[in-house]
Each structure stands twice: as C-alpha cells, then as structure tokens.
Image (tube, rainbow, N blue to C red; front, side, top):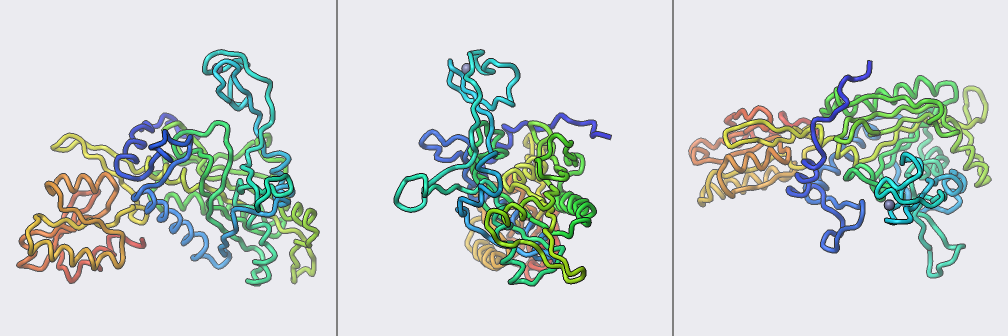
Length: 440
Ligand SMILES: [Zn+2]
C-alpha cells in the first residue's frame, strides 16, 4: 500500500528562512546578488553537515568488518570519464526560449512552447553535465580535465589498490564522502539539487550470484540508518525502479525517497550495477581488474552494489523532518527535534544572570563541556527567550546556572522535547549529559 499522504505539511520557505536567520545555510556570494543554486553552510549548518558525515562514516565504515574508506581526488584522468560513459552519454536535452531566453530540459516541460512566456523554443541539443577545466598553463583540448560528476569512479579505479593493500576478500566495499559537480540545467528546491554537492557513496563488491540478496540487505541497512537517526517512517518510502528507468548496465535500483516540501523525492539510490564498471575500466586501462577467488580457483569481475546518497539533501530532509511548531504562552514555540547526534549544538550553558560569581561558575562548566561536545554559551535576554533560541536550532539540552548553584553546587538540565527539568550536581554533569545524548 502506498502511503496515503503525499502532501507535505511544511512549506520550503519556513526552512529556508530558518536556515538563513539562524546560520545554517546562506546563498553563495549573496552580497554580489548570489550565484545560482550554490549555497554556503553557515556556523550551524557546517556542524550539522559534519555530524551527518560522521554518523554515516561510523555506521557504514568503522562499525563494519567488510568496509574501508578512501578519499580520491576531485580531478581524475580524463580517460576515467570515457570508460565510465560520462563523456559520451552524461547529457541532457537542452532547449532555449527564443523570447525570454530561459533554458529548460526538453524532457521536463510539457508541450513545445516556453512554460515561462509561451515563446517559441529552439531545437533540443545535448548538453554534457560535466564541468570542464584545464590542467596546467595551456588552455587546449589536450589538457582538459573534468570536475568529477560522481565520487563512484574514485572507488572503481582504486579497486586493485585497496584489494592489494588490505587483502580484503569478497564481499567487501569501499566508501567515500566528497564533493561532486554537475552543471544541471534546472537545479532547484533550495539545497536539494545544486551544481556543487557532496556525496556519500559505497561500492560494495560481491561474487556474481550473491548480488541479489546482498542488494536487498543494503536497501534494508540504509533505510534503517535514517530511522535510527530519528527520521519518521511515514516520511520515508522505498521505490524500486521500473525496467525502463534503469541505466542500461544496471540490474536493479531502489530509491529511498523522502516526503520533502515539494513532494516525494530521492534521498538515496541503491543500485545493482552488475560488473559494468570494472569491465569498462579493465578494457580502457588495459589492467586486469578481475578478482581471484581461491575457493573456486577462478578469476571473475565482481558485481557491485552501490548505495549512493547526497549529504546536502539529507541535511534538508533531517531539518524538514525535525521541524515542529507548538503553541505556548508567548505564541508559537519553534523546535527542531533533531536526533542528538545530528544537532549542531549539543548543550547550551545559560547563567541566570550576568553577575560575577555566576559567570565564573558558568564559564568553568562551559570550558569543561567543550572538551567533549559542541557547546554554546548564552547570557543575553530572559531565560525563556534563551530556551526558545536553543529549541529553534535543535539543541537537545540546556544547562542553567542559577543563584542556588552557588550554595548546592548543582545546575538544572532542561530537555528540549519534554521541557522537563532535573537538578544535577556539577560533579555528575558530564555523565548525566552523556547518558542523555548517547553517541555524538
Ligand atoms: Zn520564454
């Protein structure tokens, strides 16, 4: 059964506005009018993005015996993109409006007139989505290199290096987090589709014949990762690709979709790429990229399962999922119910007054907590306003230092979600916070 709900409850403007107001995401080069569809991460955004990467790396690399990580260069040998098929086929049909000059992807507009002004369109021409640049001082065809359009190829071309240096046996995988670039004709929906973005990809090499159950397992593992980080299951679904959607080499692909403000959209794709990539790189490089299986004494090309997601759109999904508003005394309390391991600030230290003895104790606590967590210190305005400011950025816990602290050496821990408070001795503060925050 398809989830009955397909209308999101939240419009994107609320998230965009919160992101700018509180310093999660800014428009790139804004003082110059902005650069289309490029976004900068502000002080809170950069912390949250780092937390997403760390949570992914922990679950998919460090906590598994069968996974290792790499970090390949953004620039790669141009032949890589010939072998992968990107030079020949990584292109979209582009049309221009002869009247308003707007550009569209021919396959994304209904009819043959400009959706903007109704003007006449040019004939479609294929437009390669790879960004080109030149390596070295001479701008000539022979020195063209590309900004990688995906991180996957860095794993395929290092397959032998990883195999030889780690002596891994099938099945095993290589994971990587890094920037990719696609000159999209129609980017949009805030940080959902951008021309410069960050991917988290895994190439998991398996013995042919074992690929289907291992593909299923990765789909399950990756789906559960989002649930473990607090994403609501109502807002997630799996969508297997139909045969005509599949890339010509892929055996199967299932998307994990999220109910974004603009509707259900891809968060991550988990593809069974068969042996296409290693075959192609063997052919184009002349290197034998087969695997020697000791059990059967045979050489073969491993099949590849590829879970591939985007950090930017995950960050957007986690923000949308966590966003909540509830009525309170002063009107509306905006609260980001982020999982503690994703929250950009874990703890806020709030002295009740700016008087000397309190500040000294509060600063002391701040210095101590900072050794472990990302912590904010705030002594401006009323305590109620300060709690609201922390709720709005998803800080799970506040530590309030009050006048009683000077007598009892204890502070109050206040919980973002329940707004419940507990009195804790300063000497027990770190273990008490650790227990509430978990791994983060
Ligand atoms: Zn037009």
